[in-house]
Length: 144
Image (spheres, helix red, strand yellow):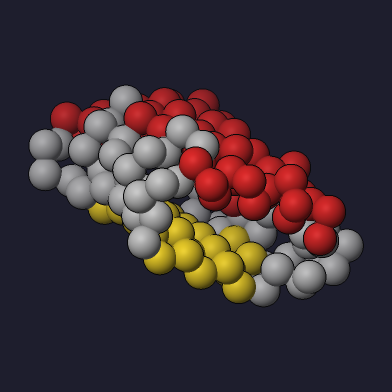
């Protein structure tokens, strides 16, 4: 049960890295269980690295925002995750509150219809200016 996993993650004092990999990771879980897990994750304050790979991030990005902000995230990797323009804008806006962020690596899995274009990225990029501790930035496959 994901709620318990989130509870133990919150209680751990040594957990520094969290990641989700795979498209079907939450398919056998109830929405309530996923919500509880993400809520508990949002109460963690010791995770420094978050990694998402091959995942439909658009399903949870809005619920994941508090966890991204409440932790002292130094490294955020989003690889091959599927999300639309509203979710991409939300992700970049969340970066504004991630004052510890040093490294950002994003490679989207988007089709041309949902992918960001110059106008969308013009809205997203100013959020990066608030990341004054950023040392490394990699943006791939933006279909610009």
